[in-house]
Image (cartoon, rainbow, N blue to C red; front, side, top):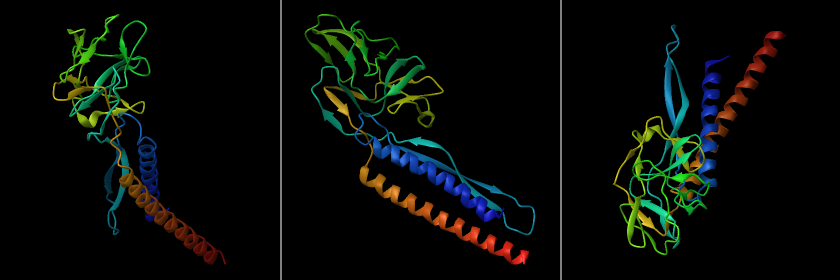
Length: 238
């Protein structure tokens, strides 16, 4: 097969992956705590060991998570928490501890602070947070200190991944990391607020159009090459 076709097919594969990421971003532009993702492309250059020049191909090697701040939206919810600045909440899941910015928490029947999926929210020491039964006033300070009727009972953990590039999306708004995240006090916790998605819909739609046009150009080239090869074969076969 011609090198130009190999290169174009490789490019088309990467563009398809980018289109899927863009579509997922747009679908979650109203999802609480969603982090926009982008595609990381890497260029690979091969020596053809002949008179022809080297062959360059770009492949989609992975995804990058956009950690920019989303807009904080006031809800007044007792257990709704949002982080302003760096950091993530940590939830205890069957697949290990995972990070999230989605702070729509609730109190479980057992009195634990849990995510909407029912996973325990962890304190700064990595332990589940218990909500005292019967507490009439529950407040969360900017440093994450949770107080019940004026008495401090826990501190909601705010964690940072050891390497921001290590984040792997596993369930929409939850991420896992290869290395254990570290507790940090950099992010401020706001009670009664939720953080919206950090997706810019106009930018994503513009990006989608650009990717679609690039894919169509590649498809046009492949169709043109297919016609050219068929023509050559027919000519030789006469």
